[in-house]
Image 1: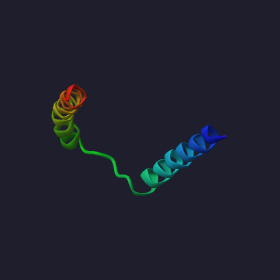
Image 2: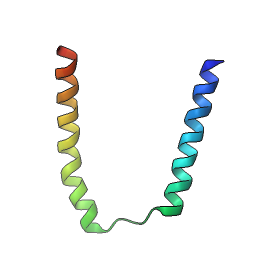
Image 3: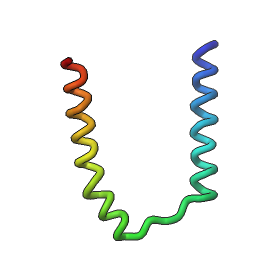
Image 4: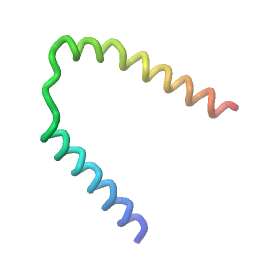
Length: 57
């Protein structure tokens, strides 16, 4: 039964994100997309290294 509660909470959370994103979201410009495309891989790499270090300690 707990699993059903968790799945329901996840479904409601995703539904809220979609509704809010459609209502308040705005399209990204090409410049913003290229800026984020340069930054996101670096951040993901840092997060992976941080998770590895945390598990080793």
